[in-house]
Amino acid sequence: MVNDQMIQIPKYIISASEAESMAKSRGLTVPQLLPSLVKSAQDIARVPISNFHVGAVGLGSDGRIFCGGNIEFPGLPLNHSIHAEQFLITNLAAHGGGPKLLYMAVSAAPCGHCRQFLQELRGISDTQIVITDQPLENPDYKPISSILPDAFGPFDLLDQDMPLILEKHENKLLLVDNALSSKNENVSNLPNGYTELVEKNDEKLQREALDAARASHAPYSGCPSGVALMDCDGKVYKGSYMESAAYNPSMMPVQAALVAYMVAGGGGYERIVAAVLVEKEGMMVRQDDTARLMLKHVSPKCELRVVYYARFSHWPAFGAPANAPVVDPIDTYTEETDKTFNPSDLPLPDITEIVPEQTDGTPAGVATMVTKQMKAIEKKIDEFNASLKARMDTPNASHGTKECISECDEVFGAAVDDIKNTLDSLDSQNLFKANFDVSAVATNVDTCNDCFNEMVGGDPEVKKFSDWVGSITGEALEALQKATNY
Ligand SMILES: [Zn+2]
Image 1: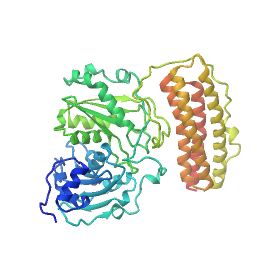
Image 2: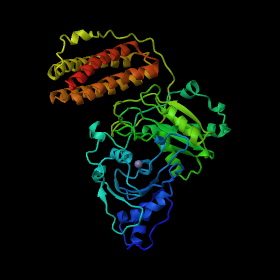
Image 3: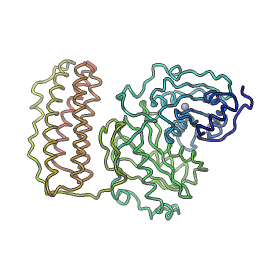
């Protein structure tokens, strides 16, 4: 029996024991309790544009209840808005609410954008949802799959074992040494009057933004990023980028950091005085401009600085696997050059050597050609990797070179796995998937070259090898794409 209707607790997270006792005192189960919390979740909403308050309440598998509201930003395009369900998921993900969202109550029917974003959670089709802003004794829960049939989701693009939102991510990233002073204004030049405070907390800001980038979910673009915000008391709040398979519903890191700010009890946005974005220079997907724009509107005094990370290793195209080894805490490297090394005389075959015949463009013809190309690349990866490893024993090999050689060993191993996947895909005549597999080969081999570029200012042999693989995979991709439409 629901006897005291709405429960007015303007809270973002309710502990498992508190949730249990709240439910028990009303003779309800915790899932039955959720609708009575929706009204208080609506109070989270900051909606100066629509004045339409949406509240979302969810039960995580660890027994805690997480809340969210919709957030709008005047002066910015509407697509910067944070939806209540996204707020809830960001809150749940940031506080380790367990690997699953079990139940959810929302004040209004989730929009298409949110139904799509929710697909990034494993097993979401079984999550139970009820749409109500009233306390109900017997809420009519139904599975999410019933409100989004025929869903497009992560596994249309990723392998089943890739980590999703709410699962552990450990992107292997390190900050580039002196990125701050070389590519951005120095801290002491900040115009906002909080120079001293920023200086005092700068290391923490960078560290938290890096942590957020390491935990970010960017399997589709391979461009993880994170933002940390600091308020005028020196408190730091971090947010991780979270991608959606459908791209547009993705949660930007600056949005996630604003959610963290609110959940931690942050007040007006104008209290935010400094921000650091960690991402990689020159990547395909970047947050710099949009984060700057957003912060300019929410807190004009806030200074955003961008710090680049140096490495993005292992499975670059699809994010780090769940069991990726954890890297050491921030470790910075100075730029080293070791020109003493004698480049190996590994002969690289001309591309025509391994593609002797023209393909007729039929799927079968293309499969034969790509199979031959992949086998040739595999053989050369083994040879090249062996010649790289021989450098380990060179007395003058620098720290950076050694780092990259073990890095290359790892990504070359991943590339060989990608080649095996390509051959399997070709075997089963799945040319569409073969496209993905071949792209992954190229990206993995390129990561080795990236490492040398960043750590030791480049290596001609490694570049040559990377270019060689790039030209062959480029040709394979072109042929596969044509054959897919054959
Ligand atoms: Zn929505």
